[in-house]
Image (cartoon, rainbow, N blue to C red; front, side, top):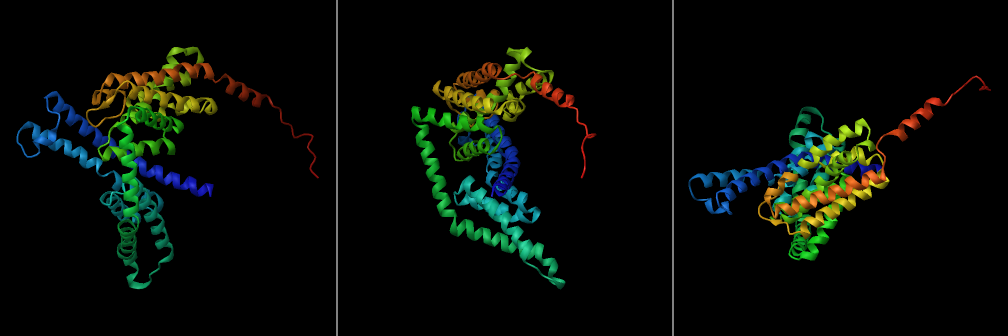
Length: 370
C-alpha cells in the first residue's frame, strides 16, 4: 500500500511539474499587463476590450496570460495520465482536464481525471488484444475511443456534478474567510505552514495548487499568502549563512549564496540542503517561520490590487507591498537566527563519523569457515 501511495504521489508531482511553467508564465504576463495599465492610470483593462489604441493591445496581451492560466487543468490532467501510461494517455488526459474546467470540477477534477485515464490506459493496453490486419487500429482508434469515451462519461455524467459542487463549496468557504480579518490570519497560518512543511513535496504542492485553483477563480488573496511563504525558507537559510559564517562549511556557505537568490525569486527547494542537515529540528522551524511570515503579511494589511506574482520582487503587484516585504523578512530572520542556534552546519560531526569509520580495522584472518 505504501508503495502504491508513493507511486501515486510521484505521478501527481510529475503532473504539477508540467503545470508549473504554464501558471507562472500566465501570471507574469497578466501582472505585466496590469502594471502597464496602472502606470497609465488604468485599473481595469477590460474596459478597453472593444476599444482601439494602445490599451486595447495591452488588454489583448493580458488575455494571453489568462489563456495560459486557463490551460492549468488540461496540462495537469494530461501529464498525470502521461506519467502513468505514456503518450497513449495524453489525448484522454487532456479531454479530462477540459471537462474538469467546463464542469467546474477544477483542480480536484483534473487530478481525478488524470489518474483515471492513466490507469484505464494501462488496463486497455494490457487486456485488449487485436490480431491480424486490424491490429494497427488499437493504438490509433480503439484505445482512444475507450479512454476518451470513458473519461467523458466519468467527468460529465458521474463526477462532474459532485466535484463541481465540492469545488464551489471550497471556493465559497475560502471567499468568506478572505472577507474576515481574523479568518484571513488563520488561513495565512495554515497555508504558510503547509508551504514550509516539505519544501516542494506533496503538502507544499497541495497548498500551492489550492492557491492557484482559487487564482483561476479570481480569488487572489491566498496566492499572496503562499507566495511570501515560498520565499521564506531559502531566504532564511541564506541570511543565516551571513549572520554566523563560522557555523557553516564552505559547501553550505556556497549553498547559502544560491539560497538567497532562490529566496528572492521564490524557489522554496533552495532550503532543502540545509533542512536535511537536521530535519527533526529544522522542519518545525520552517513550518513556524512560513506560518508567521505569511500571517504577518496579512496582519499588516496586504491586499489584492492585481493578480500577484511570486518572488520577493512580486511586492509591486500587491496592495501595501511593504507588508509583503516585512512578512517575508520576519519569517526569513526567524530561520536565520534560530537555525544557527539549533544546528551546526560545519559538517564536523559528519567528518568525525567518517573518520571513525575509516579507523575501524576489519580483519578476516581469524574468521574460521566451517
